[in-house]
Amino acid sequence: MLELIDLHVRYGGIHAVQGISLRVRPGEIVTLIGANGAGKSSTVRAVAGLVRGGLGGRILHTPPGGETVSLAGLPPEKIVARGLALCPEGRRILPHLTVAENLELGAYSRSDRKAVAGDKELVYALFPLLKERHWQPGGTLSGGEQQMLAVGRALMSRPDLLMLDEPSLGLAPILVREIFQIIRRINQEEGRTILLIEQNAHAALSIAHQAYILEVGNIVLSGPGRELLHDPKVKEAYLGG
Amino acid sequence: MSFELFVQNVFNSMTVGSLYALIAIGYTMVYGILRFINFAHGDVFMVGAYLIFFAEMLVPWPVAALIAIAGASLLGILVDQTAYRPLREAPRISALISAIGVSFLLENLAVVVFTGLPRPAVQPAWMVRPIAVGGLRVLPLTFLVPLVTAALVMGLLYVVYRTRPGLAMRAISRDIETTRMMGVSINRIIALTFGLGSALAAAAGIMWAMRYPQIHPYMGVFPGFKAFIAAVVGGIGSIRGAVLGGLLLGTVEVMAIAFNPTLSGYRDAFAFVLLIVILIFMPTGLLGEKNKDKI
Image (cartoon, rainbow over all chains, first blue to last red; front, side):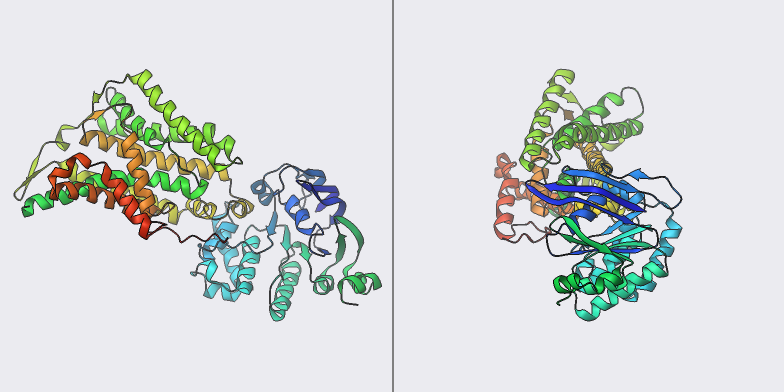
């Protein structure tokens, strides 16, 4: 599905990602965990085409049943059209557009209008609250509701690979649990592959098939999520001992 | 002032105000997306007036009007692609200077190509044959300009609020990066914005030339300035604000002179007085967004 080979990202004088390699297989939930500034966001932003210049290494995408293509240098709108959607850090809801308009914007890369209307209903089924508030400006939603809208909006492009950048950031514990349940459902029921960026290592490792731990721009540990959950080094550094 | 004369002046206000509004929309739309003032916009208005002048020699008037509007649209898009697009990542001031350069270029090019001599504007006879309404004798043009403007503005609002490119336009005005992430090709939407704004400016140019029946290469300078002021008064970035600002400016100009004819020499100063007064009390204009920047 997605393979990063020796990926480097540099911003000005900062070497944010220092040669990481990872692989996301179809149907998996893969998580990338690490502290603030470890290079997690830079990695997914590079995949989504949002890093201009300072990019090194290879980003290879293989759509289901398609040929492998390098994504480096493609603009973001071409990348989402290829089936890779990013639900960005901080949600980035368009506050002046209604909930329904935010969702429609998420489907901009598609031309099958009838199927888009159907997918909107699917998102509403996943997040009934959004249906109730479909006419409200996105900016009037609470943080948790905005996060749901951001996930729903990313789903509207019908991605094969859904990239979620810190979906639990700033949410109350009960909402964090709900978001992770929904991520699991999107993976299991809809069969979408997921690349999940998280600081909440426990929750992320619990649902991930494969996990990578990032420290200052390098992958220091990788393995199945369950295994890392019980790894003494991970426990000490990320799970509070 | 007699009642008839007052009514006459109300119509005049709406006519002049409509023309300012049509030009102001182009400034405000470009500002809303790119955050800079397209100073060449007034000159696109001028080119629209020249295009119909020459097109009308070859084809019937309605076709000539469409050619002028389409031609001005293409010019607006061309200006953006050549003079502003290479500066998208540059500081705003660079694009602003580029816009001033394009403005001078278009004006001087017009002097070279069309000569500096004023030419008589094209006026379909039925539009300028006075008709009697009550005790008044008015030109059909006086009714036509506000009506055409209303139709154009409604068409524009439909595009902006009811179509997919319009949705993208509204999204870009708030967050370019997120909008790209959603699959929107930014340059197409920017081109559409310049195209629509320039089309409205050309429509204004055509009607302006009929009302003040002559055209010359610098005819866009003052209407351009005043429409820019109308856009700022209404709240730059807001389409409804541009319409409101245009109508308000038209009304102030016409009525101030109607009630006090000795002020007619100061006609062009009213726009600036209005600008100063509004900005003192409402720094973001009548319908502008309150400043959300945090220090």
